[in-house]
Length: 384
Image (cartoon, rainbow, N blue to C red):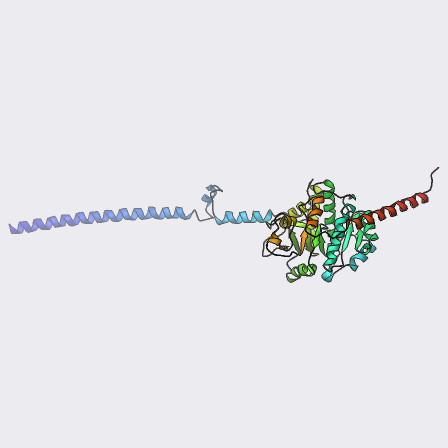
């Protein structure tokens, strides 16, 4: 009996061992099949990163963030840069008499202080001259838009520091009367001053341009501003600011180096004003600056301190230099129109011209012109 029980036990154990073996082999087979499926899944995932696999073409461009698409975008951005304007290598030489006056008034580093004006601006011209002389600056050159202003300056002893603008430099003729800021004639005047500076750059002159509604208040201004130009070769121009947000330049006061970039800047300014109706010279120049590198670290354009070189908005509207106890180098009476401009200068004790004296010079000039006209009439042959 014991022997039978022992055999039953062995049989049951054998059965259990067989079942265990069958379960184990089934498990191995199932695991092997699942590993193959997993490998296939990973292979499919890797094809997303494989640029040689054609399945990437099925991905919409707006959803693809791959490096290849980014590189294409960069290349397209670089090729969309606006081409810079072409400029001539040389311009016609100015008349010998003008060249003689230019050379006589050149300062160190071939800096030339210039202004442009017509007869209607003569009171501001003389106030500007007086402000320069009070700061010790005797050399400058005024480019006259009309014969009458030139004759007026010659009558008062400034003929050696004044010149008519050669006709070939003009795009449009300028009238002699005073013009308001918003008039078409004013835009012609400001346009012409860009043409004058352009011509001077081609003579290898570093132009220090100043509007005549500016008063110079401190000595050695040219030396001070020119130092900023000389200590950094990358600087090609220093502009007065417009307003105080450091986003616009004022084209009425600047020192410009005679470089290719500046010749291009002026050429683009002229092109814009020639082709865009109603565009002012200052607006055109600000638009032209968009073609230059304006990165703070590498730009060739530098802004003058708005507290030491204030425009009318800073000085007269907000009175910032006086509020902070700063004596400015200059004051620009822009943002003011007509007689308000002169009155603000008078109120600030920046008006130096005696109106009676100016009236006397006007009368004297009118008499000379009338006499000259009478002489010319007598010389003119009478036609039969």
